[in-house]
Structure formats: C-alpha cells, structure tokens
Length: 414
Image 1 (cartoon, rainbow, N blue to C red):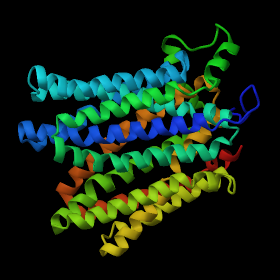
Image 2 (image 1 turned 120 degrees about the horizontal axis):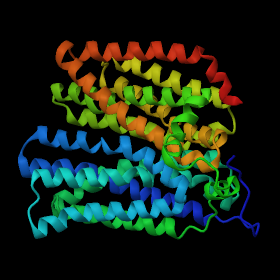
Image 3 (image 1 turned 90 degrees about the vertical axis):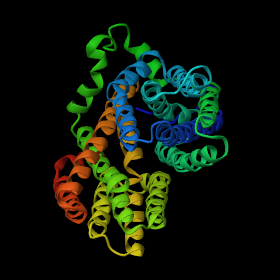
C-alpha cells in the first residue's frame, strides 16, 4: 500500500528524504534537550527530586490521549500540515519557559503546566513525520523499508545528541535560556517539512474513498484500535513491541542506574548506556539491509531472540565488559523493532488510516514503559535489585518462547 513510484514527472528527487530526516533529527534533539532541561530546572527551583519525578511522570500522560487524536488529525487534515503545525506549537510551548521567567516567575505549578502543554503537541509531529516516510520514498523512487530504518536511526541519533547538547547549554547559558535552543530546532523542523514537495498518499486515498469514509466522530477516532484488534499479525507485533519496551526501558532507566549508583561507578553506567544506544542505532539503520534479505517473520524472531539472549546474562549483573557487551546486543536487537512495525503498518493498513494506527501504537508505547518502571522500582525496593532483574529476565524468556511459537509470527509474511 505504500508504493515506491516516483513523482508525476518521473524524476527521482532525494530532497524530500533529506528534508524529512533533517526535521526528524532537529525534533529528536529538541525533545531530548527539553527532557533533560525541565527536571534540571525543577531541581534548581525546588530542590526536590520528588517534584522532578512528578513532572516527568505527569508529562508522559498527555500522550495517552493526544497520540490517538494526533493520528486522526494526520489522516483527516494531511501529514505535512499536521507535522508543521505540531512543531510550531512545540516551539511556542518551549519559548514560554524563558518568556514566563522574564515576565513573572517560574514556580513549580507553572513549570508543570508548561511541561504538560509541550508534551501534548509532540505526538502529532512524531506521528505525522512517520506517516510521511512513504511519500518521501515515492518522490525519491526508493523502497520504503530502508527509509523506515533510517528514520528510526536518525531519531535515535537525535535522542543521543540531545542530552549532550542540553548539558552543554545548562552549563554555559543556564537552564532557562537553554529552552531557546529547542525553540529554534522545532522551528527548523517545521520549516524543513514545509519545504517538502511530496504528494500525500493518505489524502489521496481519503479523496478516493469519498465522503462516506469513516474518518469522523468516535468511529473515526477509534478506527486505529479497530484495525489493530482486527489484524492478527499487526496486533501480535504491536503487543510484542509494547512488551519489549516495557522490559527494555526499565533496564536502562531503573535497574542499571540503581546497580551502578550502589557501586558508585557513574562512568561504568555511561559505558553500558552508550553500548545500548550504539547497538540501537546500528540495529535501526541496519533494518533496511535485513528487510531485503530476510522475511519479516525472521526479523521478528531475531528481535525477540536477541533481546532475550541479552537480557538473561545482563540480569546476573556480570562484570562491566560482559554487561556492556550484553547491552550492545540488547540495543542491536531492539533497533529493528520500530522500523519493522512501521513497515508492517505501511503494508497492511490503507494510507488514509495509517496515522490513526500509528497514534494508537504510540499511546500504548507511552503507557507501558512508565508503568513497568513503577513496578520495577517498587520491586527493587521490596525484594532487591538482583532478584528483580532475574525475575524480569525470566518473564521475558517465557514471553519470547510463547511469541516464537505463536502462529501469528508466520502470518507476518502474508
């Protein structure tokens, strides 16, 4: 359903691909800077780690509702239009921090409101840029699968560079002034997408479907859920990736930091996290290479098996070299998961409904990891780090075995 044909004049144009990935990188760096700067600002103003944690937790909530709505907006009003509008609104939301600080005072309630406001706009931009990949591929006359991997890899690069940029800005200009950097990055992302000259497969399919197409009201809003529940392979992969994220992210955000904090070895934590990030980027960029050589079901099995094989030895908290090697395999295995899911949606879902499917998936991915982090954190406090890590590894091994034996995996090639 994605197609790889070129534009009407028959010429391949790489420009839209470069513009889309430039916007993808700018947005990724901007969001990562904000993610680092807001808790730092809260700690400066309140001195309370609990308040910083509250802002992070509450900021994750808008995506649960905003992501499905964002998907409907993408399908209803167009991919480019929603992407540009979302980035412009995100730019305004981060500019509000220094502007409010200049005019009034950045108290904790004000910071909380502004953080939630900014988090409300992010899902629409992420969903719209993801939906634009087939349009950019069509303009460049390129197969879409490799671009799915490039898109996720570039976004991972942005999230890796963002904290470094944010830390440097806080150290040089201060936390409040640091928000001007993501303001400029979001404006750049909006400008780059606005400059793309591509058709919109979603709007074309919507026009062809006519006025009777189900894209309005509650039925239209819930269409993404209906599609996922009614498509067994798509449902299976969505659940699998949600479970992967619920195991992968607590490892990086809770278990490993707790382990190395107790050892007083922050440098070792940085080594392992860097190994995970490097593996994830390589895995995402390598998805296109895998997609032309292996069946979709085979890639799915490799993702599941790779994460399982790395989680188990890591759960024993071995010496640093082994832990870093396991982290690299973990990231390498996780990397193809998102582009694989994107490709599956592009193949199995009509272009004018893909935005809503992406939105529902984003909502699920936004909910599962924070919940898992709360449960893992509570388990660490109650029963200890090592038993919790071992139990998490055991749960995933069981899930992996069941998933690999499920008939839905074979249906991915259909």
